[in-house]
Image 1 (cartoon, rainbow, N blue to C red):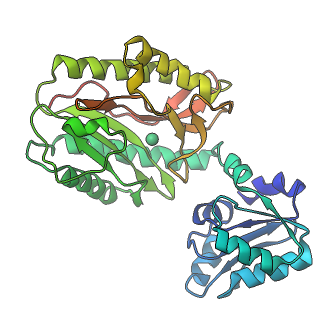
Image 2 (image 1 turned 90 degrees about the vertical axis):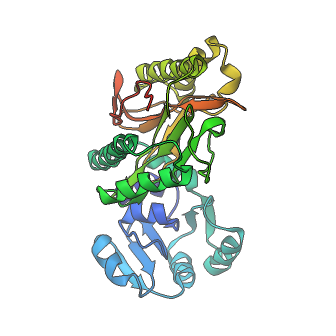
Image 3 (image 1 turned 180 degrees about the vertical axis):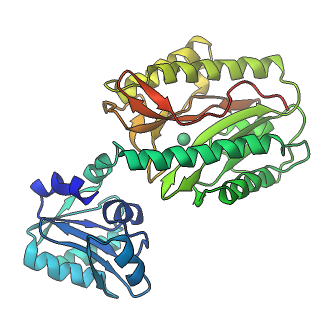
Length: 348
Ligand SMILES: [Mn+2]
């Protein structure tokens, strides 16, 4: 992936990568501690003795320098080799930035986070395989959990069951803290699971995903425990129709804003517009939230092999909410949906 940085190296002499996810993406090194230096003629992983061996095998195209003070080493390299050094301005703390400035002397720093993030938007076939697999394991976890959910079960148990299943079935970790909420609490778009017991008649919303070889899954389903009321059916069907409209719209050459608007129009028409207050979706890769955003402000034009979520929701305070989320790969003229779990209203 470091070859993707050639475009950035037209504008700066070297790039300093320090966030764990970008170190892994651009060099292969997954230890997360240290720094990666990439210039036209040098590729270096700086890390300490705990990671030397894994760095050597994971970042085989890179020189590995074992050090307890990478900041000092980078400073020396910058002084000799770089007038202008791009760094991850969104991940370096103010204190580290001060230290870095002292260490590199007259070398100028250039903000690089946004450029680096944009390089990750279009996925390779290998990345798509990993994302597909992560989502597949997560979909199987959803099917498993349908046989487990019962009135009296606590939200936190439900979250634990989902995570346990995913790790037992090929997931290496979780993409983010599992959301499993029930009843009126489903009006909280990002509510965290509590010891509230699931009751008959509750909506249950589960937003979750595992990681597979460093790549994140992300999906959401809402079900009803017991018979759905007419109001619950109405909310569910509105969100389902909006989600389908978004899925039918997402393709190469449309903007994130247009994709968002397509699904939002369906919810607005139903009279629930004020209850859909987040954006339609986001990019997914080594981070569960990355570019491009599908939001009213996003002018990014979608390209083939970007991977995005499509996740409209309606959340009515005091009543409850529904979100349905799939993860799709943008194609010319349409998209490939990685999420194969049913969206029929499930009444358990
Ligand atoms: Mn999501």
